[in-house]
Length: 384
Image (cartoon, rainbow, N blue to C red; front, top):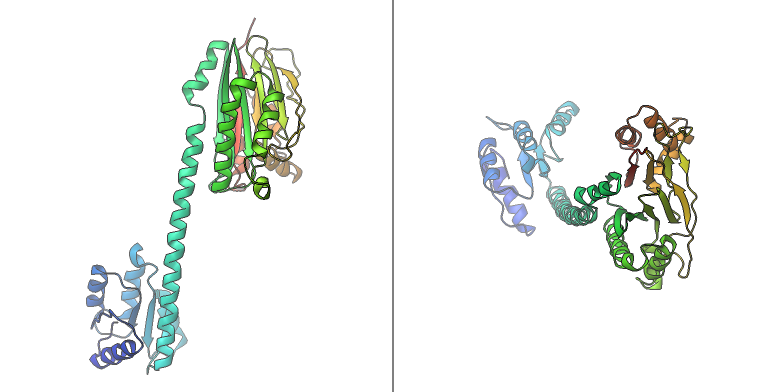
């Protein structure tokens, strides 16, 4: 409580004590108040605005300039009646005003209101800090599950190169992708997305990722069999009442390195895209694969089927998340002309490939979409 008049300090102290408030500190001027606040930040400041030396306006400005006291409730007692002067007090950082001469009921009511608000704000801040910590942990889990650059580089021995662009939403989503080594110049690649956002979506994506790794040694050679087994296992992970939380789109396929054959199955995933490489004799337009099948975890007993595409020498197999396809398709429908097929075709024409697509994705998404989005760019080396 800050006031240059001793009587006012005594009166307000008595009113607060009678109302049950304790641990009240007093200051006779602005400089003394700042020194006390520097030593221990209070829950509420009752401040006289008109004081010799450093007045209440300056005290407010200095406190608002410090991050530690930027949100400190400041209840100003003032005899100012002019609108301009009261507006000046709010502009300096005042939270609320109480008029002199002081009226007991009004003073105590405003004190209680702002102290209760202070408690609520602290609880919200603590909750937000806890949520952010949980999101950070879940995001770290997702990132550590992605294949390492070294694992991707191992494909080079088979004449292939994999590059990935993966963005995790600030709100955390369920995008994950991975590789399954199958031997004999063959490898599996998958891209999954769990619906929803937040920690639950990320954790369910981690659970599905673990299942894929478990099922890979048994079913990895057969894309349809792996999705079928994964769906049956995912549908039984949770009780019936919560099953809808594990609902994922997914594409899994097997690449035969020597022939360029890509055999895949889709659980409502985005269609794979094959780009004819320069000099392969193609028309330069991307070829989109077929899609089908229910999302993972939606219906136990669902059976999936395989489709086949061929990546020519010098060509590219592009896999991408449904969120990316939907966001770009919406922009294309809105007249922006930015569709994924168009974007990839233009990148190939400019012979910049992956880097150009990633730049275009950054421009197209910006801050519009909060979804995860992933692009896998799997190139087959040029042959004779």
